[in-house]
Length: 262
Image (cartoon, rainbow, N blue to C red; front, side, top):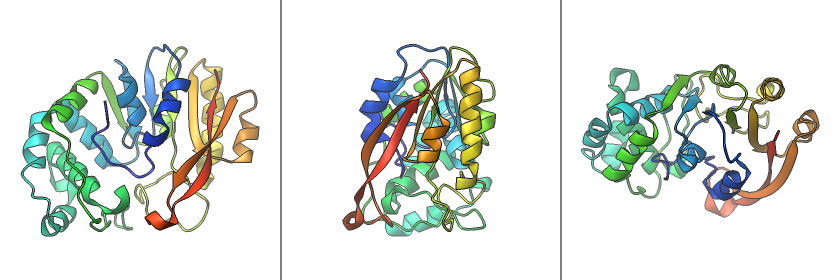
């Protein structure tokens, strides 16, 4: 099934390759940089751990899992207009129920510019309305997402914490946000998002998971230092279409790696 979230950085365009490279069998599935969780919703594992630093993402999956009817109620009550978009954007998530937070995030991501999640330094979502609203998920899609999430443990926090319980026979998919070390603009949230300085921790986590007998698939920008650090891993380099500054006329091919330890 498809994810209900529209999300910049989603691996939807390379999903067929990720599916092909995923192990045919595993015990538990872990995705600590969940975002729209496209691989999770494609593989539909019965037991999984989804993690994200963004509390809105985690609250959304909790509400989809536990209260899909409420999410539908709030989601379809909001008109798809410019005025409504900015009213919803200005709501304080902490003052809302999980179902309201889920409806808010799904709605905003369907309408915001380029599907980008970005916050200001106060942690408030500040992406303007895009050129059009994308279609909201149908009630049957919300219900299907709820059923897929029934066996899922949700973790709001650092990626290392989310995979801390992974053990032999488990499968971890790592898809950290890209960071080139330049000025951070609040993508994915200002509250501790993955930075270039976290790359060493990522390598340490990959090596630790390997020692524990965990199968790991990693997607990331092409980075020779990372490739050299993952000695013995199978590496595939692919071209993906990425946009510069979010504008269609600035789209270009970028190089990514898909690395796995099995």
